[in-house]
Image 1: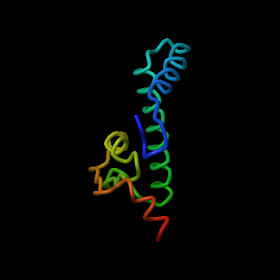
Image 2 (image 1 turned 180 degrees about the horizontal axis):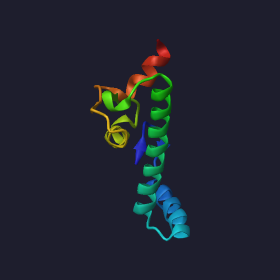
Image 3 (image 1 turned 90 degrees about the horizontal axis):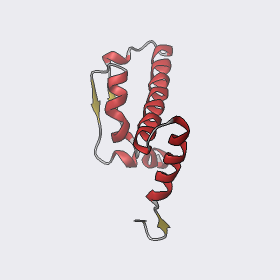
Length: 103
């Protein structure tokens, strides 16, 4: 697969890395990838909880705005972990970080 014009995507390299890591844990590559996602999402949820509490806000009363390249991937899982009211994924969510940089 190609990304843009000059970067080769090689999913087999990622698959091999997941297989190698998973072998140490007696997990297949899919279980390993799922475990990584769960850890990443729990760390993100912890950060949201911490920041919310520091600011006196209750995430359960909020709607998560999921943006960035992986916002759509993590948004629903984060909202579920935080028992949030809902998730808003804006159009062109992957461009929000670049837009913020420009502003």
